[in-house]
Image (spheres, rainbow, N blue to C red):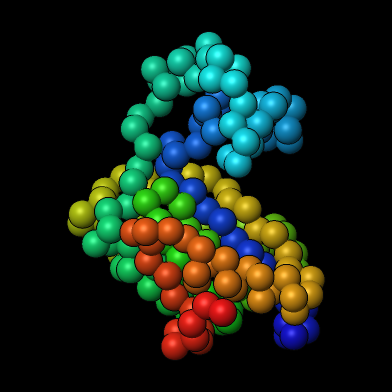
Length: 178
């Protein structure tokens, strides 16, 4: 159960330029004013929004990829930053172009976004000697977890379903996937 005034959240943050407007994997603009017909599981036709994709790619920099040897440093820095601010972290993972954290945060979304920004800043500073400049994209996704079952699913996803090359951590590190 979360502490009073808090709720568990499944946080997803992406690296800078890793998911741009017109992306072939599917995308949505802020507020969903424009979006593709597909998503990351079912990609839209490659011709869809091709002009936008070419325009964005010509003007934006390369996508940031967190090198494998820095993923644990980034993950530990995210956990440490959140814990230092007084928040309980149950699980975290860092892949090349995104990170997930299952964390207990305030109910207020505006406050949550500020906390997420501070955690991203802390993790960026931890690796700036090797990966300078912008590491994280703005914002993030901070989905509320409203049941123990959903919390368990999110935990298992973060710790056990991130694929080869991802760094993962869970509060119950010795636990094995069922």
